[in-house]
Amino acid sequence: MLDNLLDPQVLLQPERDEAGRVVDFILVYANRAACEWLGVDVEHVHNARLREILTAIHTTDLVSLLIDTADTGRTMATNAFRVPRDSGSRWIDVRAVRVDGQISLAWRDVTEQRNVTRLLERRASTDDLTSLLNRKEAIERIDALTSRTGQRIAVLSCDIDWFKTVNDTHGHAAGDSVLQAVAERIRGSLRSGDDLAARIGGDELLVVLHGVRDLDDAVAVAEKLRRRAAEPIHTAVGPITVTLSIGVTLARLSENTDALLARADAAMYQAKNGGRNQVVGKKS
View (cartoon, rainbow, N blue to C red):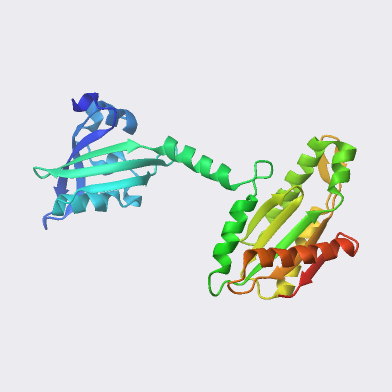
């Protein structure tokens, strides 16, 4: 019956030192699914040590969890457990129980399901064209940030100057290429993994900076971003140059997100009305 199970199943014998401490596990039995998952023949599995079969197992908590089951008899149930493999990490749901002093260990590989779930989550939170966050996700994250204490954040409202002219002159495919290039340059200008960038709609982009010292600090980052965006963009119809108008403001503690974005937008429109291709900082 065990040999016909689709999920891997092994029986482990705890190996103890003179003090009675578990130092490893010996594979007493492994079904066909386990052998296939481990990538070994049946004769190489039986009486082999767990660390020999899964050489990277010591980098995880699995051994300590199995030791706890062996010593206490507590059932071990862990979901989405990461196991390093030569071909890349795999994610498994693990179940282990003690049976007459041995450990019955079964697992189910959920790597593909996990990848699909993460892909769906990413699609739900990002813009298809630029791979930046979408408006909904950005607002939710800003809401969370502004509700915390001690979080000094700046918001940069960015708009591509004369973007409609790019579409009208070169076509929407070229316009898409420009948007993608500007988005990538914005992403490359972020200072840390805590900063975020989003496409709010059309050619409107948003940047949130963490840990800024003051408004001047945020404006300096915006200026770097503006200069980077103004470099020629290579497209199928030839090089295209665009500029950004950027409004910058600092968030107040527990401030309403709509009010924060409205202030950043007001600074951005001030930059546009002032001649475009510039950064305007607006004090909170």
